[in-house]
Length: 102
Image 1 (spheres, helix red, strand yellow):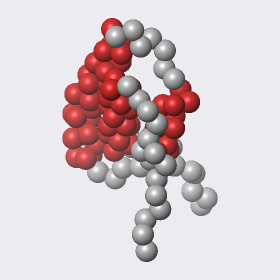
Image 2 (cartoon, rainbow, N blue to C red; image 1 turned 45 degrees about the vertical axis):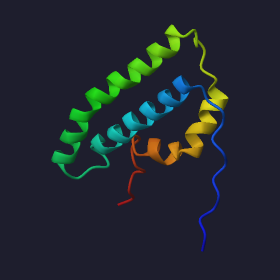
Image 3 (cartoon, one colour; image 1 turned 90 degrees about the vertical axis):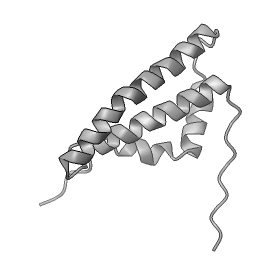
């Protein structure tokens, strides 16, 4: 059975694409660190170590946008890009899981 076709990624500037990529990398690492969703300290430690570098890259992406005069974020377009790139699932790992009934 073929996989469903994803909607096309909206048109982004190179800097916006970089921002989205760096943001999702950071979110993925935060999800791995989340103590409510992780079961081992080593994986969280490794993710926390990598987070420092990814946060710098995220900051640099935003700084580059600002320096180029891209001072406003087009939230609707960036939101569509995040959805196409599975951002809803990826950011869900950062939140608390539902409380188990028990």
